[in-house]
Image (tube, rainbow, N blue to C red; front, side, top):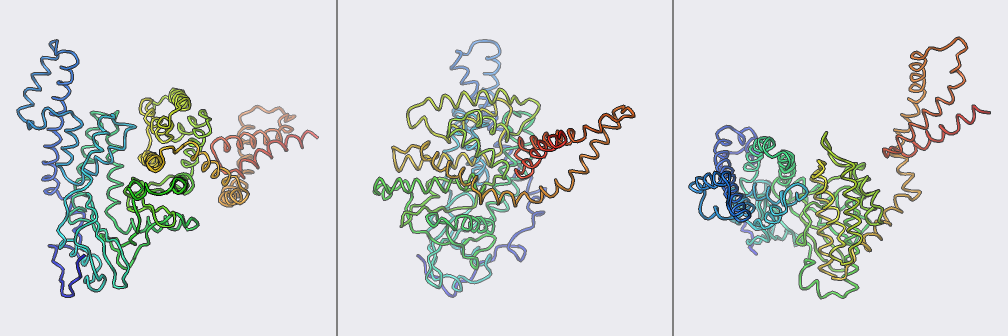
Length: 564
């Protein structure tokens, strides 16, 4: 721990605007893009050449290297070996990809970490290798970190902190963290964006979008444009410390009625665009030796708290920790669970959340037809999509899962992940938020097994899912849903007479009506049928329940009244 020197003066960080940042226009200027583009393109071409060599070698081992076509391919691979470094030439393609990404620096390491999650699109050999990407990158000199803190917060260090620990707690691709003590004696964590990272990310994002569009023509089945756009959106949000502060405060608000779930308090007066100051949580990681000394009942209680928190994030709030792993979870005194490092979050809209909850509920309860139907609803489809085929395959997958007897075969999260992977086979794709959601479930299950080898994920999930289901059907919840749907209901009441009148007018204009107007007596029936069909359609598409239930009641009552 370093005592702050009152005479410490910040260094000057070159020619920057008053906020300490170069303009976006300067960052993506043609010369800067060209320099970075040359380095990136070189690695990209060498990766393609190395990948071709790896494919030819795999075919040699599989087929024995026979045939004219193979000899031509082998000759081309021999030419490529002249340009590819010998240390790469004999490596499998996934290993080459990982090492090339590490050479390109922090942006591409982060890209690889995102790619490692997309096992629903990419081959498992690639995603498994990318999980070995460097998790701890070189540390930035402490003096540079102090300079960034002072420049971003606009005050000298002695005005804010009594001590700042020189050795970082962690050094990742975007930021590094240091322990500190405020002048009031409070222990805090300072998360500081590394110098030059913002500039590098903006340049690399521009280049990646270009490469993504090129690769979309070459390998459309892997959806490179979609993956790159998702990566750029997530990563550019991670460098804004104000956004992470807002995320943390949102979680605190969402869980204010669950004191057993803890998020670090934010110190706004010491937080800026590049510096985040948050409470230091005193606890241990769930995979640590200290956590393993807890009694069996204590471990089961913590697993239950974690399950409740994760299911609530995903299916009730639609706002969840998207970078969940054992290092971002803590066991705190008093049998509490803490969550930290909240820069990467996922959001799920209410209609999608309804379908995902129904999918999870169907899996837990064994209603696989329901699960397949709801998961198919939220997929992104095109003219090639085979929805019936996907639903059949998913039902069969769920049945095989249900028949399994070992705990390892009973992972609900892996079942959900395999269901997403089925989507690509039937040309149905899912947004990255859903993949991150499944990763959160996988992490929760993994931590559960770590703390209790007898952990029954299906039994614990069933209890919490059923509780949430009951909560959603409670009178208070239904009244709340009705109040939220009130504007839609009022709008439906206002527009209904106009829609019915116009519908009847069009019908009468297109029908040759005799002078006796035989349809006049059918108006009530037509109105009732219209209301009944409209209500059924709204119910099928999960419209506001007060609206569709009222329409169905009107549809049943009006013809009966006319028949009297």
